[in-house]
Length: 528
Ligand code: FAD
Ligand code: SIN
Image (cartoon, rainbow, N blue to C red; front, side):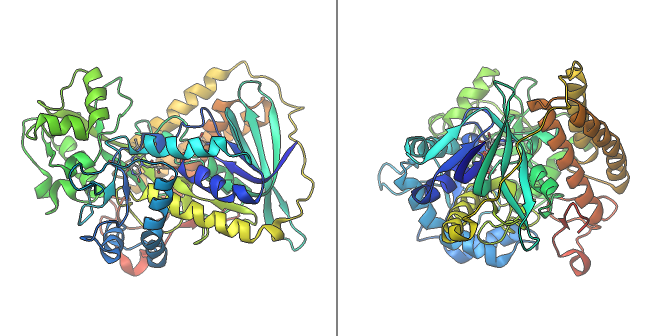
């Protein structure tokens, strides 16, 4: 058994900012699944939205966020996000993050993305996330109070009831993937920052670690989870069998890239007067609609009318990556399709990242803060992770005396389990869940498809439960159990909402219904 003051699950922007902020007040253990720099943060392209220009205002950023969120954002939380944003950006810069500046004026260059009424996206070329991850990781790795442990797959949270009967989290069990050993980590409080869940879908912009582990674990432990029906599909991922849905940043549309049918016709104006810069849900549905009408497998994204030098300097990573697949961004359009990108729902947390379980915090893509409503505004997620991880750190420090005594916890018990010789069943079921979610619970849904998916998933869940209790845990099994859990939550939330709003579009209820459904969909294991 290992003990520390703070346990952090996840080493992306949310986990590491929390770790850095609490480290002066106690020992911190950070657990992460593979390499500590691997996660969605590292792949963020467009940038981070925040009000830094005199031509911008807090009100405008707040209004753009509320507008994209289609009536479900929590205004007071959005206000915190926007107003505390600039201070957190300064923190990132003080940690060594280098955002692009204009050569002449030395002012930060600001990008434009869908749903933003002005340019407000700070960026580092088209590899902003890699630059942020580098800076925060370098600091965290050097901090004497922070221990970052790689190749750790946290399986479950350790829970107990405190003296007053309140459910609390005392740490976590984690599988060390290189030895197969399960270790017990005990802590005074725990931060869950495991990122998103794109791997629930067959096609996703997300890295392999994004299997919704934190959401699944928190739900199993009894925490409230909300708004899982709002899964964001990014409109433009490269269509190529070997590209693994490589993202083509929305910032490209901000610089004038057009969406075209395969025979070269622009179509976005027919769906929204903001055209290519409409919020993401609208653009993804428009592409889906165009592909269904034409039977085509992709649409085109074209920026070749801009100066080749500009394209190469503004989007160097994308230029290089698409070249590997035989495309020249400066002279031809790219084939693109939507892919699962961002989980707007998550573990319910308050304005300090506190979940409904005592001693458990959450931040980043795992959390549901109320910022995103029914559709996240582009480049608001890195900001959300920063602002609320930092607030959670402040709250943890202030409440450390309350968390002082940690009751004893039980070690992991794997005595009755054996090593499985049927690993192929796990791989097969992985594929089955992801394909089913893509086909039945994608951009356009219906009650019939949701019910079909629900029934199929119930059987799969039983099979996994059986497997889980008899065989020794592996990384694949842990992740399969989690994607299945998250899929079930997406379906359950989708079935509850009898309207279409933001990212949830159900052909049986095509209209938005504010009278009955202007509310969050909140689920707990105990049936709340
Ligand atoms: P992550 O950075 O994903 O980190 C998750 C961490 O949790 C990892 O360390 C992982 O190993 C660990 N982990 C997961 N499960 C376990 C487990 N069971 N046990 C132990 N560790 C675990 N947002 C923007 O605002 N702007 C952008 O330009 C932008 N571009 C994007 C481009 C791409 C391709 C993608 C995929 C996302 C993009 N996003 C963008 C979204 C944004 O990057 C993410 O929402 C954000 O980085 C999430 O940060 P995080 O700290 O919550 O999680
Ligand atoms: C992008 O660069 O298009 C992704 C931005 C985001 O997900 O916020």
